[in-house]
Length: 373
Image (cartoon, rainbow, N blue to C red; front, top):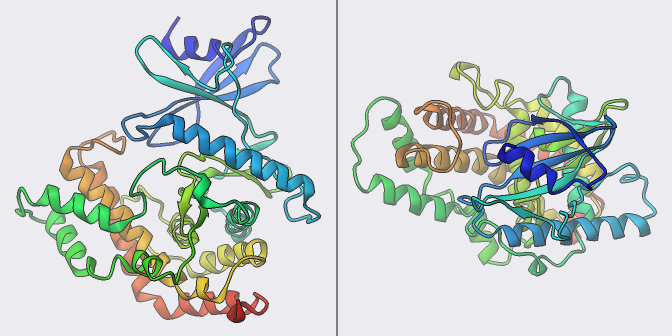
């Protein structure tokens, strides 16, 4: 029995038989599989956690249970129809009663419920898709807005702290600043923006931005869409749920949705930030999250939109220089190419600042009395 099948067996009752196991999704951190049982109906997600990235898997599972339980309880007492069809991931217990399995090689495995009648959104095919992505993130933020963030653990210390990433970058480039071509472009691009980049962390330290529960990775393929209705019914991959700024989530969501060329674009000239998608995402988000947003939150939306692709490009480039030790790659220069896509997206955002700020202002106007909050 191979290692994946052995792990899956530990989450299946003795009277059930595994009919099939296939790789699932396009994650670049964990290995994910879809397990189907003999009746062909019951399915679950099996994941091999990357403990080189998530060094404290117990903290990951703690946060997942805490957030999932909180959301289920809040939905039961909620009178709103905005979350009526929402589904939450649930951990599946192994045969020994624990919510994980560690194999003979020390690999950490877990099993999660499969979201019914839904599929990950792999691409934005229309503006309705973009709106649903924003609405999904807004629902998640709304359902966790009354959960005290201090109850959660930091599963990735320093995550979304660009100062931390700049320190890592400086440590790598400190060995050598020699670069040519694409490398020289990346280094100059980072140097030109490194003084501005800590803008959100600075505002957090000044208590101008509130720490809340965030998802941490709200990219489009973490949004589950009902195949019948086209509506978002869940947001998955809760490993990075932790205390943070909702601006980080909004920036990451827009980064993922509004790059019409995709994150692995081969033609850098095709990379641009799509204003129509931006408007649709923020409209859907505000519709769901307007009950807790404040005017001050909106003040820093543009900074978030600009910052997150810069931050991710910085991380990709640093990982490339370090030998591709964090993000999975299929070729040695893939993280360098990924960095260039993000930096080109930043350029497009900067060129369209006026239009993006106008969209943000329009959404802000839809939030009642936000300036007085």
